[in-house]
Length: 167
Length: 155
Image: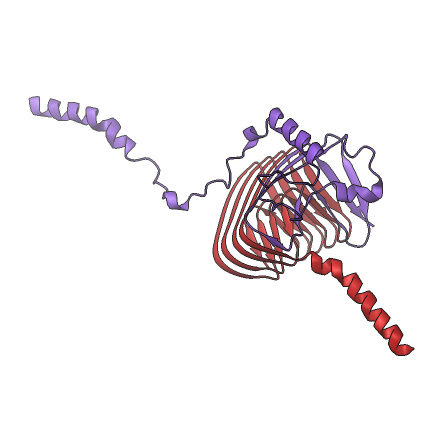
């Protein structure tokens, strides 16, 4: 009887894990992101709150090729307030990826702000972020910021306009 | 005297050419990065926005024969959406069920502020292309966001 219950639990666990397995992506080739944000705001308030406007998000992905992110933000803001909060406008996120090839980030920010307050808060406009990944290849980042600000307050807080971040 | 005059005239004539050669140092073209696509603010004119909204309404999650998927969110689209369905309605999930998706055109035009309360590290994406396809090749995402004011409050 105990063995049957154990098998049932294992089967249940397998069924629950299927959606997570299905979410894995393999990207071979080119990944282009062009985001134009005008008069927009992405606000994340509270512990681990996450708010994203535009861009491309991949989770548990294998990526091999070229990723190009072009973000134009005008009169826009990304504000993350709280421990682990994250607010983003545009850009490309690659997590748990093996990245090889060329990564290009072009960001034009005008009258815009990225503000992160709190430990490990993350506010970002444009750019490419790669986490828990292995990267080989060429990285190119071009940022033009006019009347814009990136402000991070707190332990491990990150405020970013454009650029490429590899963690 | 004639020699001095001819030298002075020559110097005056050559002055513009000399000055033009003293501009800022040339930047090697190899260090300049061109935009990924030709998209700019001008590309998102009202005609384009209406076209994307109409095609997104007609096609839904299906891609065209050329592999383009359209997605649009406006105030009218989310007016009668249930709170539990709202987060799914805000972003397209790119899958390759039938024809492979090569391009995604996304339009976000929200003039009213939007506030979403989430629980347990739930993330809210507005007009973000979420890649959940087992295999993708050469995908291009164009996103136009206008007047969006998204606030996510975690409880």
